[in-house]
Image (cartoon, rainbow, N blue to C red):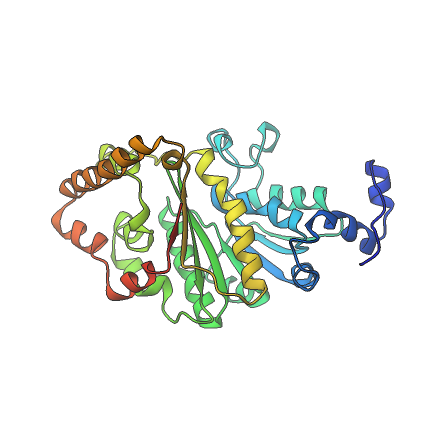
Length: 324
């Protein structure tokens, strides 16, 4: 692995390389920034990507390009045209299973990759075995449906039970909040903000507001959600500049976990906010508090309290947040 990798400029030349030579050439430009011992760990670390749409799908190709080779991709969904504004797919992928498309993309990057597809997604029957096989879990399970929300909770429960580290993300307007729940250390799912029985008892929105990183919801998202409350046909908007950020953030966080290092609970980047001038950023900060207050006033009192009253564990976890 220390020898200079061969120069490869055509598909035929790449496919003719032995696996060792291919991997050395693929990861050549990582050298100097990714230590050799970490690159070796990356090469052998099995990953579970649960949900391969907006959030999970943003991590598939970056992780493959980093040099990960052992994947299980689980997703029950298929691509629709409205997904193409932010997800890694084309018109030719419409109707195809999202995990299947992700696996094909990985094999196109590295023909030696192992990419198993689980088209039924995360289920009560398979979650234990899928979590057992993973060193690190990427949680991109969709929370816009009740079934997806229950699958996400089941995934965190099993990761907590087996003490596996998990990385997830939330895209909200221009904000991407990447979160790490290192269940090797954390002993309650979602830092204790949600009990297992709550997922069955509470409404979908109430569950989402308990587990989402509420301290990072942008003002423009509060404004949009307020307008959508009470509409049975409402679909939460999602933008490419937020969703695709998870790819870069998650790759680094997964690398750190594989290296055995600590990772902050939340790393949040709002591209809409940081691209403003200093004066407009100040206005945006004030506007966020105003929009949050307007949103809370529109919620039923019991939902406003249950969904936004942070517990002691949540306050402690927020001290480790990093925001840009």
